[in-house]
Length: 322
Image (cartoon, rainbow, N blue to C red; front, side):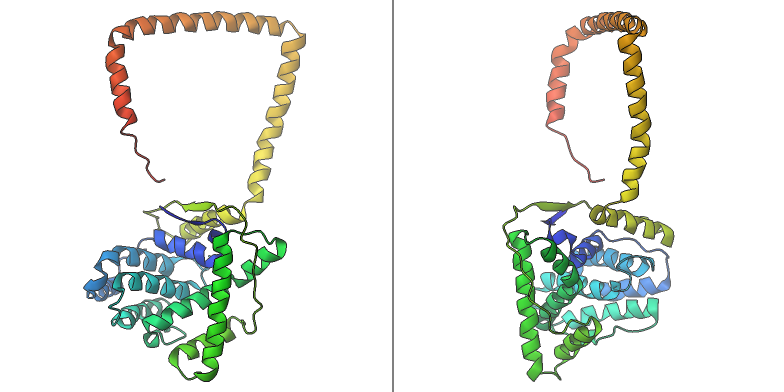
């Protein structure tokens, strides 16, 4: 179970990266996946995250076309996987580009085309800067809406948007003189694609009390059909966007129940029905009390043993993710 700042959890990149962390399964058993897994397992340096990477790749590969993240899924997947790989490789990142190139085969298999940028040319150092600005471009309009509506935000949110903008400005300046460098070609391509030239700096006060949003893992997602996958995605989105129809459905049940309660109260208070019910409930309460007394006498001899068992159970409670 992972947790992040509540404000940050609302931004698109954080949302989808959390979903990829949960991952999915192969929808079909096909020869392509055998070759893919063989290629991935060749790099034993990242053996600790094989399963994590595969589940994230499976999820992104099979999400439906109506999914909010469908259009950007491959870029998100690239930056999500790259961060995971670098965390494991640490200082020895000489194979980073080779490992990441495996994703190109996945995208080509599903869309019959390569990545729009040369991922093989992205070094470990340049990757980090590109990820920051890519995420910032995806989140920018949401951040703008947030700070326009209210300047209240958490300290982590404030730090994130200001540091991301600083990285954006540095790359703008750096690529003015190094426009032919591979990472600058990719960065300038992002500027054009997402129309993010000359962005204004956004900020907020950072005074909002910190609160963590807990992402509950949903291992074992069933990808039997695109419809089910799309439904699953819409359920996730409900966490962030709310569901007005749910409120309407609730009120549909509340109003009739309220009417029944009022009518019942009038009958109970102002008719003989109230006296009858009172007498009936009193007798029923007496009968229940007698039954409980009998049960207590029956188990009184074993009370000490039961109490010890209860205390032992209290120390062995475990919480399972739903």
